[in-house]
Image 1 (cartoon, rainbow, N blue to C red):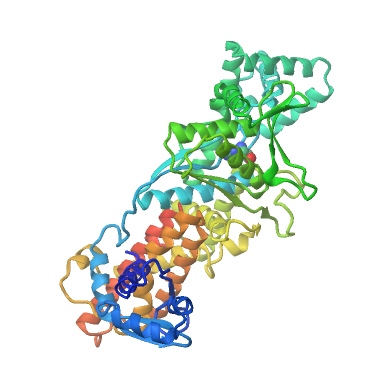
Image 2 (cartoon, rainbow, N blue to C red; image 1 turned 135 degrees about the vertical axis):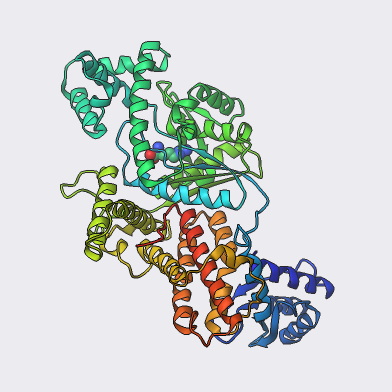
Length: 580
Ligand code: ARG
């Protein structure tokens, strides 16, 4: 249920009755207290167009709109705003309907095929913090899209191809010849890469061997491909360890690495040449983008094939677009990478559209994110300035959570501790990332993310657990409660504010789905927990002098708050606990 949408529908009918067809229907949430919960802001624009008094137009709309069930009062404010006061009886009825609904009143939307390209580590190296962001944010968006009913197709566009594999395979071959197994040799990809690079730069003959490996690999040499496959497999399993620790929904089936497009690259370039989109420039195949010319009128240069014949990241992305459009039938593609790749995707989209590699109405949405910074506001690094191994970071999160739990409950049962430390630790890391608007850089701060106060995972997880303990104390069964026939009655301000917010979950999820910004859901949940706290302080639930109806209503608000918190955290990929 989307209250805002319902209001838009009612006002649209009213405008149609008045003959104002095709007029915009702006309905917004009202944040000022005492002015109703929503506001219709369309009268002023209409009045301007018709050269009439906006307050008169507003009055005509009020007379025409059929809304008495939903709204108790409509009033004109200022130059012609219409303030909408939502009816408590209507809210009570919605609360009862949503309470017995498994989907908590969240409707399925018209399904689209949405390709989501996220995580996408480069297999030559360890996953780094940039991939952590892509993985966490992408996975939350995927879950929200799927819950709303979209057909989500995950694509893990892993960097598993390219000239650097020549050097790596040559080095691996030598290690295997010394009787090492690949798993051991590749246990630390960062070290392995460094060793190979040192040999490449210094060891006589090694660079040549490496180059031969590249040629053999690209030529489809069986032995070389087997070696490559071995490398890739070990590296993917490193990523899988991280996915498992993080509770991320990616699996092997979602891997569609760069290598998968290898056979299409020549086709891509030849189509671009045929259509006159790419042309030769100093031996390379290039698309000149006049639309993105610099201030001297020099067009942007987008290379699709190097002078030696090699293909690039860009060529692969064009091939991916073709595949996603024609084979996966994408209506929409979302790609999560750091903001530095924004220009690349802008240019890629431009070239792909010129070449008709996708349907004209197909959406291609690069979803950039900022950098993860250390406390010194510089890119996140280890104390010695190296890249942080993700698995170490996640281990530290769990360790810190364990200390935190033991500090509060020294004699906690070991099994509970094991579950709590990972749910809390991993949840904290994920939520810290998800709760910031992804486009900005953010400072990674252990103390802030593991705090039980503020907009953090522990705060929300704790809010959920507190409600569970109320139920336990009252020996209350939420499932049986949903079947009760006692009528609801929302009366107090705090009840109303909480109820209204509970019914706005769909709106938050739809925004996440459109903008690919999970922080909107985080803000929603944080507000929910805060409104719940206010309600809990203002409205006694189990006291003797509370009427049957009030008790029922308030318990219903508790049940729905708990289920909404759980659902929301679940969609963010974050766990909850019955007890903490
Ligand atoms: N592997 C790339 C990187 O680490 C990200 C790939 C994103 N997806 C894409 N279709 N280019 O930067």
